[in-house]
Image 1 (cartoon, rainbow, N blue to C red):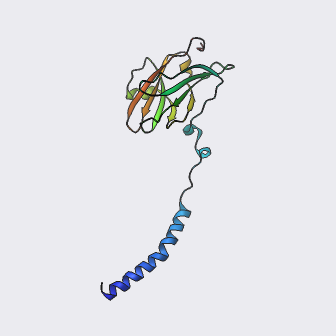
Image 2 (image 1 turned 90 degrees about the vertical axis):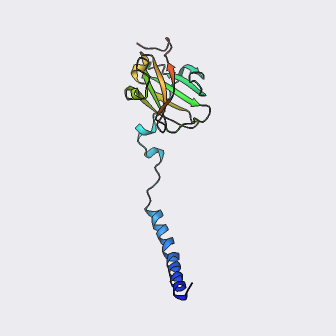
Image 3 (image 1 turned 120 degrees about the horizontal axis):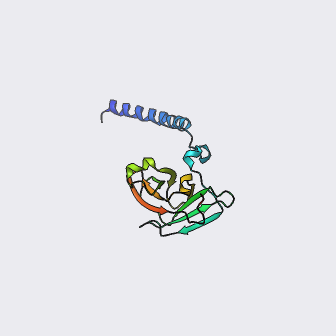
Length: 167
């Protein structure tokens, strides 16, 4: 390297040594804060349902998946029903959405527009959601839909036991 290039190289490196740390500190100060769960709207967080009475608990509803499914009800307000899903192992699909739909609706990805979105499911976290009012009187099914793969992963029938059905 000739002398003028070495001098220019030394000046550029010295300038970068001064400018880069200052730019890094300004970038850290200007970044947006990480949202906390309390800051996320309730409609996106999900409404973890907690009801005292268990109508049934089954581990064999989902074909090829190890998910414990519980149907919950309120003793004092029988109109409220909730479903709780607890995956026993990691689900191998991205962005899983849980839907409920009546059994008489055709089973296809396009029919999800008529289904009721309950919320998201991921990892091995136990989640619960309130079911729509139609679930009290209509036999339905739960659907696991992978948003990332744009496919229905599995469906499970959800029939309310006669003792728990409200008319």
